[in-house]
Image (cartoon, rainbow, N blue to C red; front, side):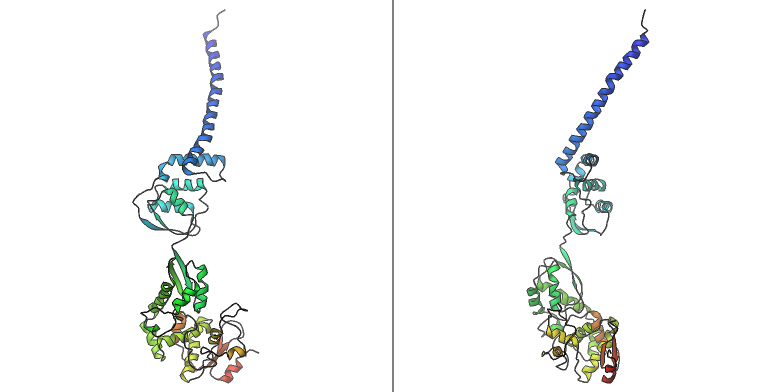
Length: 382
């Protein structure tokens, strides 16, 4: 009996299936094994080890991506590129950073840059700040540069009413390489070229309160010069005419403003406070200003402040030319560095009949003003 040829063909196909399916499966396993071994190892050889927290599939995925991108990450976009400023805002996303780098011409491709950040585990540690970057840097170099926001510049703040010792105390955390002793020496040797400091033995009072941007290499002399220069920039002709109208030189006006700055807790009261002191000056009455006593006494270790509060009767008798309870007229020099509000208050004081003021009893920081001593006493707290 003859076997039909179709039966032979069917049996052959079945045999082929039995042979091919295991073979294909085996080949797939080999490919997967090679992918699992060779792709990550090649990527690691070029781009370093992947982040430890990536899963196996993520390691393979990003390793393959990096190998695909090849020179996009390892070659600079422009070997002759110059440095430019690049800023990362607080809470800015990785996608935004990568896109901005591509748009500004620092890197070739934002997507490849983002893939490298994730692969290397650098995507979660990019720091906000200002950087000096160049297209002559590779994308990998830029990725690592963005991990350290240490800037070549620092922000330095002088608050209204600070005396030079308080400014000096802030230097240690400012990022500036200036020791307090160097700062004091610079303050006590005022910069030249400013008429209002002619004959002054200190720049105290003219270290203008403001927010500053300084190079980390700034010296003490440069710092003091810049603070004084900012004062000079705000010393308008109008302000000078205001001082002259009150019968004050610039130095005298700044001295009085340094007292007003410490007394006027609520800034809208500064013109009233200035009027009281100017009224007293005009009749030869002692200023009897508490801040001048605080300045004369100096640092209070128990209270950890340069401004002792409250003052005792013994404090009010402290013998110092700065103590306006003891000596009439203005103190010999400013006791703090006043802001623009206090300077304007002295130049353009309120017109009042007041000769007295004292803090209100409600703790608001406001004052009660009086024309006579009797009224002043009635404003006392019970």
